[in-house]
Amino acid sequence: IADGQAGTRHVFVRDLLVSCRIGVHRHEKRIDQPVRINLDLAVSEGAAPARDRLSDVLDYEEIVDRVRRIAGRGHTNLLETLAERIAAACLEDGRVRTARVRVEKLDVFPDAASVGVEIERFNPR
Image (cartoon, rainbow, N blue to C red; front, side, top):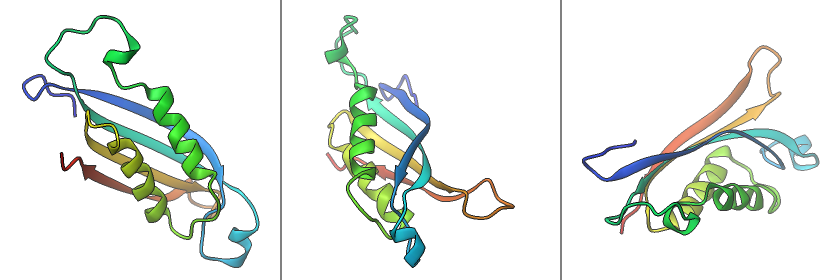
């Protein structure tokens, strides 16, 4: 995702754990479940050199806060829907060209570490 010729840097969040109500089954609608989220963002670097200021870069703390708010909004049936909402929130910042979002439900099957979905969305701007 980082590409010097395209002028992008790779901003990522690894293994963010959130609790949310997600799933189509009745028991999933009553309790929070652990969900692991990974983000890979291609971010425009801009023409000016970095001045060591937070305002010059994508603030990953802001991105993490957005993800937490989305996860905490209430029940969502599908991981795919949660992933789309997260990708859309990342792309709200015009500097984000590409958002790759992986969302995994943990503790679903005793013989699997996780189940999930990964999507990639592009900024139409």
